[in-house]
Image (tube, rainbow, N blue to C red; front, top):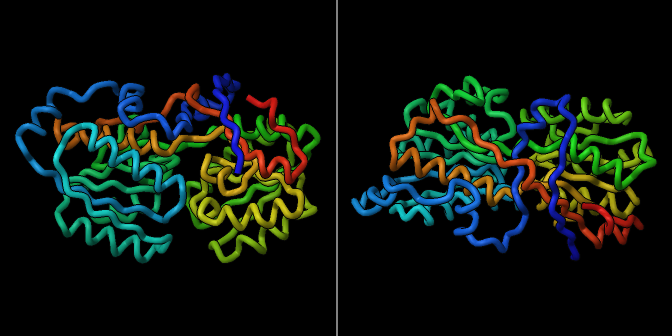
Length: 342
């Protein structure tokens, strides 16, 4: 497939305060881990170097909700940050494959193993671990709103053993993109999984953004990945475009979404790069590798400097790091020109 990536320095309307806090990362995977470190918190601290010299080996557990490009990239970025910090560690990588029961079982295992720190990738993973331990530090990533998901007291002052990096999608910017790509669009079908708490949060933000843009919203929800094909088929002919934010179920099933939508000339604007790669039309996307790298740096501070998750605010990437990402093959299939977009 052919893809387009262009830099973005967008200024969104001040009406949506939460959108101004949105964290987005560059989508340039070729950037080295060293460069990424320089772009975020710069250099490894003296305390980290001293800890590495002391030869302590940290025991880290990882619970990832499901396999898909965004969450996989977060995992990779987290590990890269640990490696760049020069610490010694063992890591237990666990994946729940989208199964909530497995999520709970794995969380119990990691806690019982007595890990020094647990990385939770996606909201259900973090909720499973946080429900079992209040002692082991938990760093979450690929989580839209920690506070609204009940993981912290507030995003500015977590107050417990959980902190991390948010993947709050720039929804207002993505709806603006939809209107640039499809200026005649009147109705937008919002595709999401009703079982994901983060999707409920983003759904309300989407409704507000669409209302402000004069667009009518039609909801298309699935309870599981098994319903994706039939639900997307039901949207054909009813809306001018589909929009899907960073919903894990939809992201994991994006190949199916694209198959149905593209065959029926239904454009899909999506929440992140992996969904574009899987056949979506375009996005102003979040770089999940950088998001995971940021979480890894937070973990290093906790392990080596004694940083307290309770006082570590949820971290976000600057909005100016967002990039336009387009799938030229999908655009050609749909007969849409995206070459002039930035």
